[in-house]
Length: 446
Image (cartoon, rainbow, N blue to C red; front, side, top):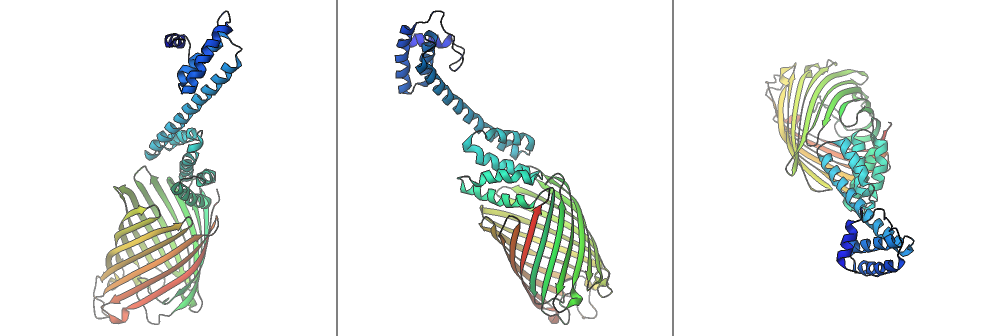
């Protein structure tokens, strides 16, 4: 059997795995010659030539079981290879669409990639991310479940973190926090200044917050909250409050933007204390190997207690941070923040600014450490007649938090904090230590 005859036979057929048209007159004897060629070429690994030869066997002997079995095996292998290549192409296409922010088209491509077992974990991970982004947290969970089983340790770790997040988020989500704390100086003025008689006390706190994101992480959102801070001894400093915010978020392939309006009310010792309106905007975007984030806010504060009404006025703040993640589990940041307070009592207004640094370390999925430290220089804008000077203060703030996700909807938080304040008025210098333990419950309701 010459190769020329095999090529001629190939040209006469619609496709190597297509239907075989038998000859008008069967010829089993001639078919036997092709069987020998087919088996030889198949054993040598020449799949294409073997397919041609087996087709010629069936043309001459349509009942030949060996030829039918061989064709089925070779064509199934071909189909599986083509399907695997198509699934890989779909995954690459999905990743490209995902990076461009074309979420709907990316989801279609990732679903196509699920047909290949070796790509299920990666495709499932990104389908979970898309579902979480759109507020479909209940749908995201099963996708992350599949990704957690990945042999890729990095992918499995990220999937485990997002699986916990999916259980706590949604279009409607509720968070409840309970916390006990030791505060070495509860008697502080609204600007953080130590007042006479400052004392240590134990503190109990509770907070409930309801969040609404109708279209997920994009578009409008709202939240309402209520909180209470009670002291063991100094009940005159107990705080009860309620607040809410309306905002809008843009989540693009590169740039993230948000803007919101907030309203807060506080009662001190059971009496009206503070009413505040706030406008805030933020932006976040990658720049080379780092991520740059900036925010600015303006807040109108009206103190309703006569003791503190001199602090009423406008507070403006701004912050710029740069984040860098040398590893998947570690993120470090550095930045600068500043604030300007214009008050009714001109002697209480000030301008402050200073550097800040922070880190976030994931010890393992569900266990992380967060830390920050900052220094602020504060210059008061006017001469304070009672003090006989224009104040200049400095403060060093440091804190650390350990967060442990003990269950799907529960977390434990332990924290410590320190402020060391200095001043050109010696009696206004002080130190303040806080430390506490909290329990957090969060769940996506819809």
